[in-house]
Amino acid sequence: MQAKPCRESRVIKTNRVFPNDVNDHNTLFGGKLMSDIDMTASISATRHSRASVVTASTDSVAFLAPVSPSDSVCLESFVTWTGRSSMEVFVKVTAEDLRSGDRRIAATAFLTFVAIDDAGMPTPVPQVLPESDEELQLNKSGDERAETRRAHRRQSQKMAEYLTTSRPGDRSVGGDVGEQLVDTTTCALHDATSRRNVNASRLDRRESELRNFAGREDIASAHTAHGSLRTADG
Image 1: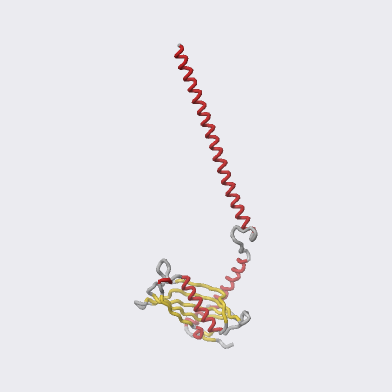
Image 2 (image 1 turned 180 degrees about the vertical axis):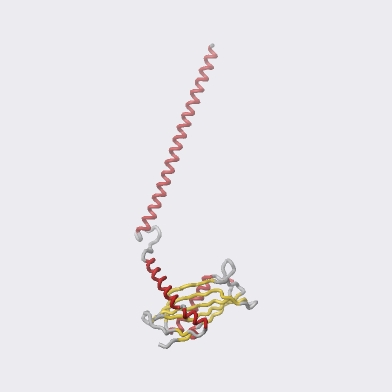
């Protein structure tokens, strides 16, 4: 299979920033930009492989500078590295102030796509042939990024082994989670009951003290009355 130059998969898309594209800070919403990045990169992968493609991973997205409503946003993507059926696509996002003409790199991203045949199985793709200095540098470091992706995927697969799909509080599925929640609730109820018992004991003790105090006052009053009667008799 003959290698293809990066320019054959290059896609350039330029947008304006409209009011419904910005966030509370009046800058381009990151989710909108990520959607455009994925769409542009998928066209590059399809152009390179001339096959159906699926997104295997969004390896990295770096937001380097905010994009304001006065800017245009230019997305440039092309395939930088290939495996047997996988393709790494680099996306460069350039913001341009439409009034001053100043241009700056607003974001960069790497995504991985897999080419599939009509049966949905991975299919081989051509190797990539870099030409410009930018393309050569990105292609040269592609093997290192591919190994990082493989290591990250192994970690994700290992993590998925102990993740649960049960709903919070559902004991019928994922019993451990449900038991933990029940145990937590039981402990909370026990603590609340203990606090109520302590408060009740304090009230009982206070009432006893008040009764004792009232009794002492009655005795003192009786002594005072008895003394008054003795004085009156005398």
